[in-house]
Image 1: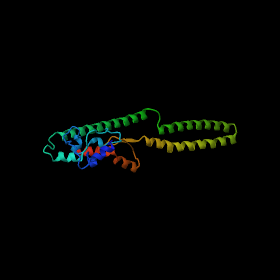
Image 2: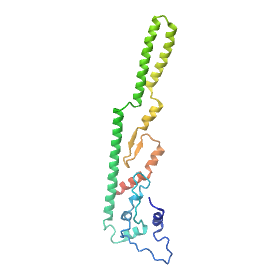
Image 3: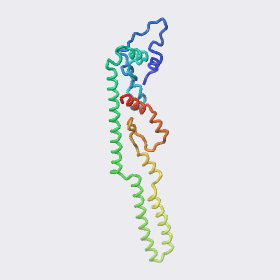
Image 4: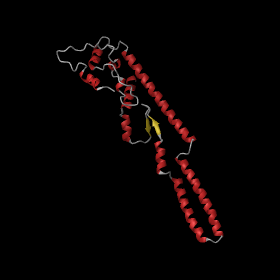
Length: 228
């Protein structure tokens, strides 16, 4: 992240604190302390500050006046700066593509583990349904025995319990519980094909917009457009 001094240098120049009669800095655009990437358009370190892709601060000089002097010089685009700049941007995009592939692999592995592992939300419901079915079958057997013994009132009371259990079983069969539905939705993730970030499928539009306008996503878009 740029320091306050670096930001002021960009806005007002490195000699901003000098009096009019003081000697100006004699740093040239081809000085080793000047950022070559900044001369070519922008420094990639500025794109992803405070994001997961943060490249760390650039210790070189970012000076708009030096960039203008470079663009006006007879050596403009003859020093190989632009070639190195594009090569560096391509390496950044290659890293993004690797992150996207890793993201897809993680999601595929997670899905495979869910399919092969313990029961998911629907599996838990099936277990409850099976338990209820076994209880209902046991109660039906007891009701038949009570009926054969002439204990009608006890059999009728037990039939009410059977009906309640059947209703509970039907409810589990028709719709999963709210908690289970929310948990299942939480696990539905996708990978942004631009920056490699994980996104929630069907997320609120405001959060989708925040992602699309965020530094990491916009920085990758700017990098891609420059290369293309």
